[in-house]
Amino acid sequence: MKPHLPHYIRYISARIAGPMLLTCMTLTGVGWLMQSLQFIEYIVNRGLDVGTFFYLTGLILPSILWVILPLSLFIGTLYAYHKLTTESELVILSGAGISVRDLMKPALLFAGIVTLLSYLVGLYLMPASYREFKDMQAFIRNNYASLLLQEGVFSSPTKGLTVYIRERDDDGTLHGMLVHDSREAGKTITYMAENGELVQGANGPHFLLENGNRQEIDQKTGGLTLLDFDRYALELALFSTDINQHRWREPQERYLSELFDPQDSEPRFLQRLRAEGHHRITWPLFNIALAVLALVPFMTGQFSRRGQGKKVAGVAVLALGLIIWGLTLTSMATGNALFVPVMYLTVMMSGGGIYYFVVRSSGSLRVRRKFPDIFGQLRRTPAGGA
Image (cartoon, rainbow, N blue to C red; front, side, top):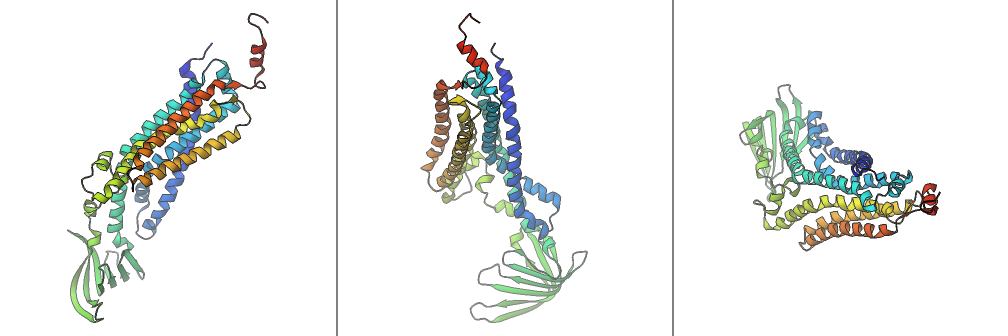
């Protein structure tokens, strides 16, 4: 009697889900660790608290997950069907009358679900989280300057600005200050003050220096201009709190509509944005292509518990090559729009072509004679006889 279809679909899907989730969590964790190491200096040098650090780095998880999902699905499918083969479960299902197309349905169904998840991540979660990440990163870079100032240390809150303080009180008052400002090209200014503090103003943070002098060197003549002051305000325009309002948003921060119809980009950036938009559409489809590719060693030729190693290794190499090629096409499409159709052709032909190959090859699919003896006995026993 033919097994109830939904039952074995649920069973095989569950066998795929376990290794896929484990692979996904492992690869995502490795990717997150590699990315978060770049922001350790926010804790070491900028005084960022641990909670904010984990929130900041947690915002990059959707971006990592989006890239990892197709590879995780491929590994999960490959592992699940390999286990089903080595434990003779595919042989039993095939001998019970389940066709190759039906045996492929659990993987295709699971691939469809993961594809929808990828679209959710790529079209909404990733741009939303990455936008928050970049805004928060810019804010931290430009507003944690006061925490960076340490006693007896030459600190560089931003490029072109070096600050030294001899002593710092608990209330934030700074003593023995030296500020070397070379942010403006061709102009170098050094400030020395007995006291000072870093305060927030309408235009962002700035230093209030007391009892000091301002020394400027003329780059052309080499002459020194010295100005003594009782009180001096040094604006830090690069630390403006409204920096995010003027910051150009990267392609990964934009939603699909903003990629294909940007309102704030120069013509030279349009192709880069559109290439990212096409990448958002095509990349989730690799879930289906890779899931079908993972079935090739087990749905073609003979059902056998042996001799699968070379086939598995072969499709693993093909899967890695397909992933690299897909990512490379996106990079190539940023510079040349002619590669955009190739992006769609690659994913459509790889998925459709592999599926067609598996279905056509399944006509020769059979159980090896050395497998469970019951199948050999059934073939040798005449109809109606013992």
